[in-house]
Amino acid sequence: MVKIVYILHRRDDVSPEEFYAYWKNSHGPLVRSFAQALRATRYVQSHTLATPLNEAFRQSRGMLAPEAGITEVWWKSLDDLQAGFASEAGQNAARALIADEAKFIDLARSRCFLTEEHTIFDAL
Image 1 (cartoon, rainbow, N blue to C red):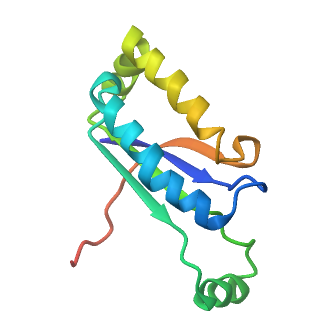
Image 2: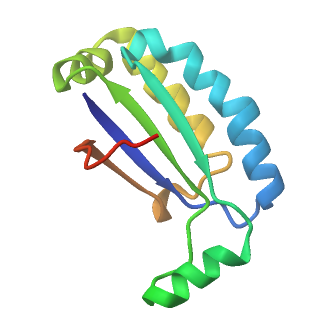
Image 3: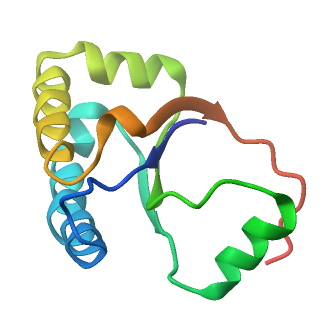
């Protein structure tokens, strides 16, 4: 399986509360509605927690401040991903998703890339 990972930066004019509520309750269902057209098999949002532990982890490693969150979208293969985005329905879905993302995500300061998972352990 392959996935696209989005590292999201919240727009400055959107409060954290508005950002997370919109992402989960509006954008999430929109993505779900386009899953079949895009041939996506899984979609997960990881919302950054507002906890002092984040600052402790960051400081202990000398890293940058955390982003607002991560989205992961899975496909069975690169061929499925490409076929999903190549179809007319997939292209329409992509345009609609990008327009919606611009409402709450600072796209210019966010990141997006394809990955392939390599499980090192799975003890849960």
